[in-house]
Image (cartoon, rainbow, N blue to C red; front, side, top):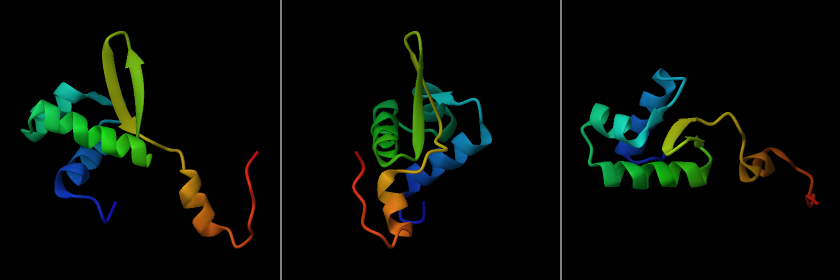
Length: 84
């Protein structure tokens, strides 16, 4: 989280405060950001594994991810292994 741009840090902080998750519109309104920019920031956070996406009908609800990406696990391993 240290190397993230300002808006992405603000989004992560906001999602930590709202454990049930927020929609793109909710996040954009609370942070006074453009909805399209917010969607792009959330997409980057989703790809990096920082947030998780849950769909409830037409709504996309973003929450903080509790998963560890494989790339992060490889940093902790001294042995070489290949996942199947």
